[in-house]
Amino acid sequence: MPRPSPPTGAGLYLMVALSGVCGLTWEVLWQHHAGLALGVSARGAAITLAAIMGGIGIGGLLAARLWNRGQLARPMLTYALAELAIGLWGLLVPGGFSLIAGLDTALYQANPTLAEALQPVLVGSVLLPPSIAMGVTIPVLAPVARRVGSSIAVVYALNTAGAVAGVLLATFVALPLVGVQATGWMASGLNVAVAAWAATRVDGAIPIRAPGRVTWPPASDLTVAFISGAVIFALEVSWFRSIRAAFHSTTESFAVILASFLMCLSVGAWLAGRLGPRYPGYLPWVMLTGAFAVLVLTPPIDALDGTARLDLADASLLVQRATRLVHLVFAPVVTLGMVFPWLLARHNSTSGAGQLYALNTVGAVVGALVSGFLLLPAIGATQTSLLAGLAMAVCAWAIAPSWRRAVAFTAAIGVGLVVVKQTSEGTARTRVQGQDTLRYGSVLFVHEGPESTVWVADRHRDKKRSLIIDGFRASSEGAGVNYMRCGTPPRDGGTGSRRSTGDLLWNRPDCQRGSTGRLQTH
Image 1: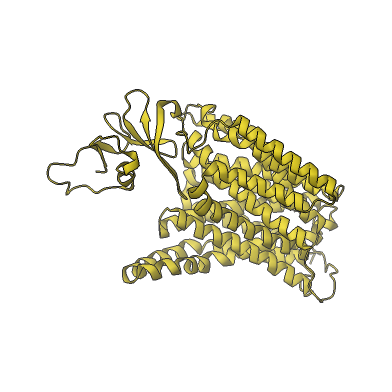
Image 2 (image 1 turned 90 degrees about the vertical axis):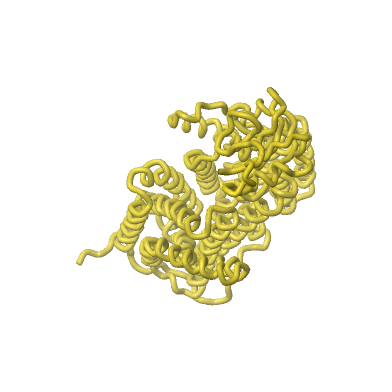
């Protein structure tokens, strides 16, 4: 029987890239199944995100624990088992969510409060096992990466690059051509193929230190890992709101937005893998550069709808949208994307990478939930983005090694705030964002919630009111409405219609102009 051959650098990179393709494909599919089971809502998406990211964090801690206990002498075999678990369990997720849908319906009929309280438990029981396996995959490859002359930061970069391909292939190729079920089988098959290849590259035991007292990375590095995850996900939530208004809220546009972000994060991770080991003390400057870029480029991102006037009917122009978007977010996302991999390069071991992985994913969950459910409704998307940039700047200031750098950080933050004030072109609180932004005048009401931004505004042409949701005109007074009709209640009392959420907003006291029009759905 031939002896298994050792992994090569090219083989390792291809393996983790294909794993990234599977990872994002599974996340797209799991969000789809969660939406069918729990309903398409911000709460359901948040529960699903927390389960996936929480599982990845637990997986990182598990990898670190196994390494510290001396139980990862064959990391490639562990990696193969983790990939196999992802592929096989992923096929069980649709059935699991079907059971959740039935159980959730029965519980809701008996006790709505209990049903909502148990939803995270039910979703976690389905998604935590494969997510934990995902969290194990990257940290366990640290000794393998060192053996081929690379680092865990480069592995992380290639995995993220694979994720770009995953979200694009799933959205534009697999799902339209073969459907949800077949896409799941394809992702599972690819996981199994990666696992089989990894299993044939087990080349003997890798020496690891004897079990002993677990040592964590310094508190400052753990804090930076947490803050970087929170800031990046907070920016995704806040920036995505303005970008969606500019590109319209379609599945294809969301895929392009997500892929653009992931591509920039991948570039940042690759740069960190190359520069981090050479210049370990430059991390505060990288963080400050990212924070400064966020402060300066948030206003242009908020004004993207005024410069991205593209023919939405032409699918080929998605590339132009992505190009325009990347021009704006490249600097901040690449520099912020360097922070966490920079730490991985500094702690280039399974133990260090696993612990940092856990803190980073916890920060990601906290950043997404706090920004979406607390900050957006309270202060709006623009201020949430600026607050995220300031949080990164303050973190950079805190780990600066000398008072001179601290002074430089403080001065740069002040300059950034001045630039923001001078270049601001209006936010969602002061104007309607979207392809038809010039059509509207004064904003009568605006609500930036976890799921969408809703405006009620006067039209320039005739001063009639319109209801706009994420840049899409949902309804308006008079003719030419989209999918809702405005008018007076039916003479029969309206027994065949029901009031919508938009009706409640439309008739708020602060939106009234003395008109008798009401919004109705039919």
